[in-house]
Image (cartoon, rainbow, N blue to C red; front, side):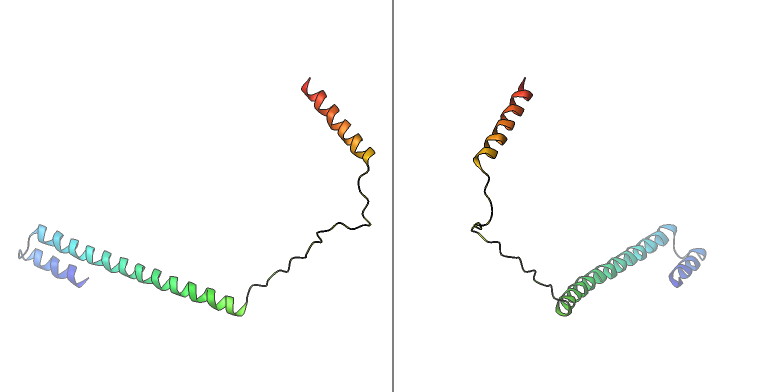
Length: 104
């Protein structure tokens, strides 16, 4: 605010012209822009490190539980009844009839 006031006073006294005022304001605007972008960049860098630290901290206190998968038997049990030949013939005939009806 002080820079603007002193620039305005110098302009009223005729010590500087309009282009000098615009040039000073432009320089001040660019400086503020660089300062703001620097703060945002710094904040994002800090955010990256803090997020990584929080992730490690949570994994330390709450580790992931390994889910045990049940082992399925590979051999068939003797007690299970198998599909008899008559059932296979019935299913085959039904599929054959269905395919013949749909093609016509």
